[in-house]
Every structure is written in structure tokens, then in C-alpha cells.
Image (cartoon, rainbow, N blue to C red):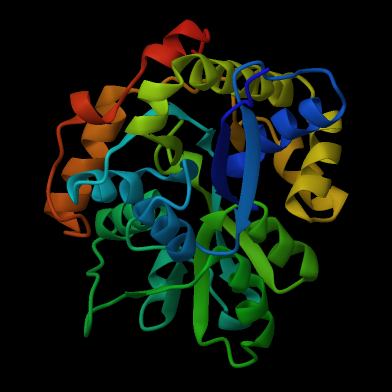
Length: 307
């Protein structure tokens, strides 16, 4: 019998990527099996190493920030987005030692974001601009980029409160809140309801050579998303192990209805159009717009029954 091809997927240990953990759990327990490929998951601590390996071809695909995938596509990397991995799911947390009560209190202090090419950047920028603040060197707010996993330690060690706060994917926000150093300021869904963020991007070559395997993967992940939304308790237990977090932190994220959702994973063209328009014109973080019809490959999500 011919050996099955392997598909290697990179991800971060964030709840945005929990559908991967649920699928891995199903495979481990024998609830599911893949006929057309073997799945290998590769965890990363930050976005730059993951993006670098996706760019170099060391990964077959990745759960990645949509703007990073768009920028790689613009640079000529032959990848396609086949599905979203979640909706909403991020949080703005203030540093208790910075004494932030309202948005204007962020002025003159450092604000942490996980990447310039992120929906987090877009969301915080949008929130600040709508309140009349100016962003950039020498202005009201300057964004500093920090890997999501490093944020809790930075806040813990910031005794003088120089960092006002941050926006990040869960569970790192809830981790800082649980540790007593941070306070919930605003959920990302309250800035842009039901917003996209991370996507599953795959090499074009993988899609062309193994469409049956891609459909198997997407179908499993869609089912995993529906499982999480319907069973937050058991999903939190899987998530605590997969993400290396305390159970109560993951429970806090998943038990709060709508904080992060997994039952609408079909890529919405208008959402991606908004992202690229804002990020090329308003904050100029992306090089240029791309052809979204070539970038989004929605056939698998459609066939898998994604909403």
C-alpha cells in the first residue's frame, strides 16, 4: 500500500487555532482518521517564525493572520486561503499599574500588538482613530510589536506601568487578567462584530496534488468548530492540553458566549476586502491590494458545509 502524503501545518498556541487541537484530539482517540494524508502539527511561539517557514516552504500550510497570508500572496508566494479558523476571539487588556480608565489614558504610553500585519493592528487603530487620536511616531500612540506568548511576562515585569496595555488573541489576555496584572478593557467583537482574523492558508501545490486530503482536513476542522461552540466544557479540556494553559483560563474564554466563535468558517469576500482596504490605505501596513478571487479558494469550505 502506497504511503500517504504528509501535510504539515503551523500554528500558535492561541484559542484562534483550537479547531486544530480538537481535530488532533479526534485523531489521537481514533474518533476520526484521514484516508488521504497524515497530519503533522508544528507549534510556534510568534508570528514571524511561522510566516518565515510558510514563505520558505518549510510548512505545507498554516493557521495564520489573514493580513500576513495576504502579504505573502502579494509577494508571489503560491498559497490559498481555504477557510477561516474562527471569528472574533481577541481582547484589549489594560496594565493595572498604568492606571488606564478610558481610551484617552493610553496617550503617551506603549501599546502592544502581536504584528503590524494583523487584524489586531486594524482593530486598535480603528478604535483610536474613531476617538480622534493620532497614531505614529511623535503622535498620541505608538504601537510596539511583541509575540503573543511574550506579552504576559512583559506586563508582569512592567513595574512602572510604561505599557498601557495590549490587544492579543486569547488566552493570553485572560492569562494576564488571572495573574492579577491586567484588566479587561474591550473585546475585539465590540469593535468589529464577528470579525475574521486567522485563516488556514495552504500551498497551491498541496491543493492541486491532494484535493481529497484538503477536503478531509477542512471537513474535520469545520466539524471541530461546531463541536467547540456546542460543547465549551469538553472543548476547554482539550484546549488546556493543546494550548498548554490552565483549564480555568480556557474555560473563561470559551464559556463567555461570543467571545470567540467557530461555527462560521466560510471565508467572506467583503471581510477580506475591508481588511485590505484599511491596511493599504488607512494604516499602510500592507504593500498593496491583491486579487481576492485568486487568493480565496472557497470550494473546500463550501463542500465541507462551512457556514
